[in-house]
Length: 187
Ligand SMILES: CNC(=O)c1cccc(C)c1Nc1nc(N2CCN(c3ccccc3Cl)CC2)nc(N2CSC[C@H]2C(=O)NC)n1
Image 1 (cartoon, rainbow, N blue to C red):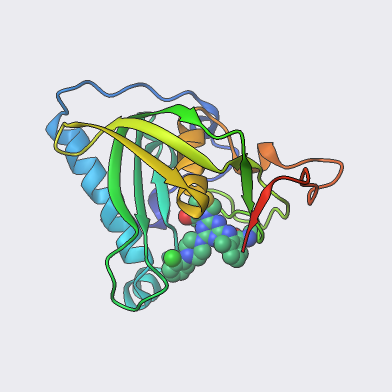
Image 2: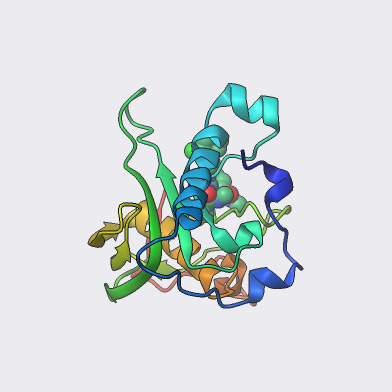
């Protein structure tokens, strides 16, 4: 199972590399890695397992964070509204590509955290509010999906990792909490 020991931290060069596309059809190895990444996220959100294995809670993970420079991301976004409800998004994306996005921008009111960053970096991370992503799913099928708000933010954070971009690269240095007036600030 993947634990925090497998997660590389800022300063490791792989976090700044551009990851390679994975061959389609997917290899057994890449399918297994995707499954392990998704399981890590589920484990990280389980209070008992997170405590037992000292896992930091996450809703997204990119293969480069495991020192695997491949274009693979996993997303496990729970439905925090209703206890026990199905997750909002639970998927592995191979070779994800943002094919279009809104002019409207958005950010999380509380800023962003990252499993590869062991320190708080306050500030608004301005992203696109809505995106359309094309990717290959774990069954090898091509998907095209639209995301908005929190889910769109998380997907962009993970795709950034495939291009060597860290969330704080987007924070306004002079005024970290600067947000142009029409940016959606998501609570
Ligand atoms: C500095 N302020 C903050 O971190 C921050 C502070 C407050 C609110 C938010 C909303 C913040 N921001 C933020 N909170 C999260 N989580 C909230 C806790 N949660 C979680 C934790 C434990 C169990 C189950 C779960 Cl569900 C896991 C997810 N995740 C991300 N990001 C940025 S996009 C990728 C995603 C990620 O997975 N990061 C590891 N940002």
